[in-house]
Image (cartoon, rainbow, N blue to C red; front, side, top):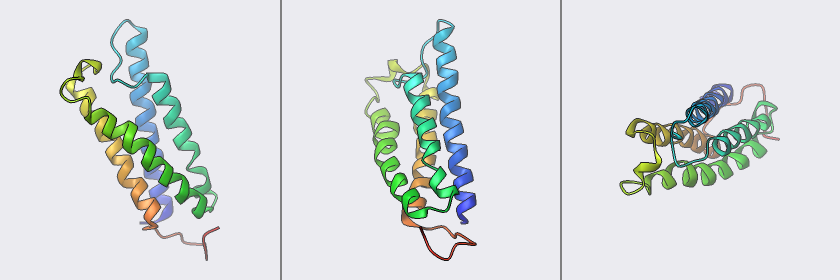
Length: 132
């Protein structure tokens, strides 16, 4: 996989996460329930921060990018996957629906796979002789 393709997929992951949290925020604002146990503003800002962590990759600083994606694996692996899984079955009332629960985990599993690819260096970076 080319680095550009990986970074594009990771941007898509960030957009999915932000979108999920924006819709959750709109639900709460209109008197409904948050989609998940994660506070929508916290979740959205965390995904925005993740998106900023992709900048070193776009700028060719693949060493910094890979290190940041290692940190993302820890943060989103726990907060985005394990924490949600631990809510099953007793904490499902924190989710607006089973669909919202599955989406919360699914979006983050998608990101986890991408982050593992990034950390492992399983990407090609045409035009760059070496990592910065």
